[in-house]
Amino acid sequence: MKTSYDLEYLPKPRKNGSREAPEITEIKSFLACKRQNMCFEYDNAQQARNRLKVVQRFRSGNGLQEVFECYRVEKCVYVLRTKNGGKKCK
Image (cartoon, rainbow, N blue to C red; front, side):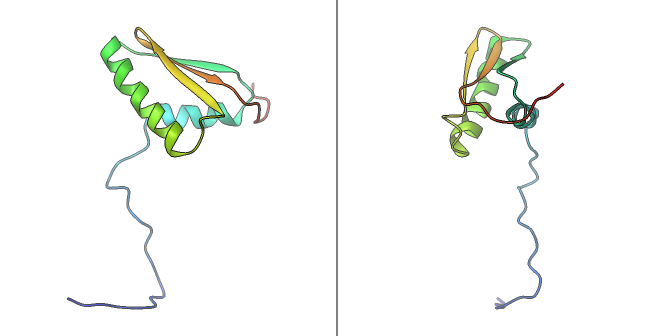
């Protein structure tokens, strides 16, 4: 085993090959605008249930509980802004 200290170059940490979910990308752009709500519609209720968990994990992991809330009704996931912010979007 080789150990090194005070390296000049540190590589960026990898994300285990995973990429950001499309819902998270959309929510980030939603939060940057002044829109008040959005909806993700899926093929079935099970898929909506699974994707809601992804959105909830993002919300709690980034401390955004006061900024927006999310819930599911049948095969749709709804995201509602609870705190104003962002800029006007087209």
